[in-house]
Image 1 (tube, rainbow, N blue to C red):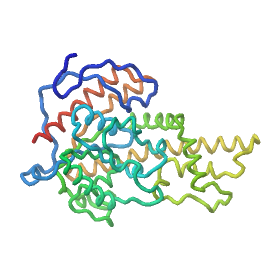
Image 2 (cartoon, rainbow, N blue to C red):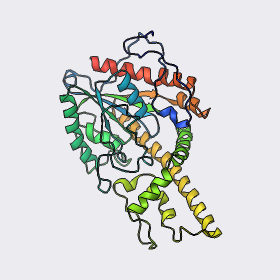
Image 3 (cartoon, rainbow, N blue to C red):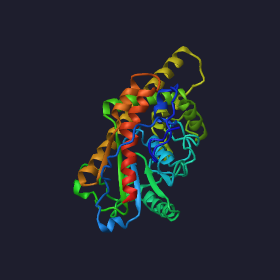
Image 4 (tube, rainbow, N blue to C red):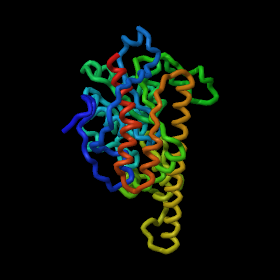
Length: 354
């Protein structure tokens, strides 16, 4: 079977998958033609000093933009000597795997992952905690002669880990603070991949993703969670305290539904009331997910405006193509490969070779 280059796998035909969200799940993708052009790597402050720093690859972007899929594509096919560090501040907690959209063990394809469902869901894991534990993990990964790949949408975590000067009592993303408050000197030699999707297209996808998460068992998962945590109560004064995993989108939105008294009643008025509460909760989840994506994009733009050297990878066309059909077809795969995977691979390859 013909190989396009040492950095591409053999060509495989990829059958359509059943779910819309399968576009962002893992499969053996078709490979595009290789290119001889080698773009300059977007390293930050590429001086003699930073070249001596330890190298770290960072994949960032708003929720739902395909960061996890891209990371697995890169590690399994091009950079197997890498380990992934999750930087999603909700996915660090154990539990609610569907609600928080954690990557399953199967989809991780044997790639080592750190901070994915590892921490106590009832505690607060702060950016300062991530900086402390994350830096130790980076050192351990590098000591094994591997490359740390930080992947996630929580830019407060990414900033806390990478900025050389970090003040846990100051939010550099607060609009009341000047962009000059953002530290542009980094602790590591970083290569940033910013996976971007046009907000109108991304919002359409995020709505669809919520529907599919519900079909996959999100509602039942939340029901079990509320019962196990003792949140279902007749007393309206009992409410969810938003700490740890309780801040996950889906928990506060469904609280009123699960706390409604007489939930087992089959009376028509009660059934109708619960239907309304259910629809309100789903709408709130979709609204808040879209708002989260917008806030995350705003933080990325702030880092860029402050001087962080982010290489933008536009995945809009792949998402738009996927939205045009209920199945992921050959055309979607080709666009994802050509416009997302291939340029990302070249950037990281050049970065690691420097």
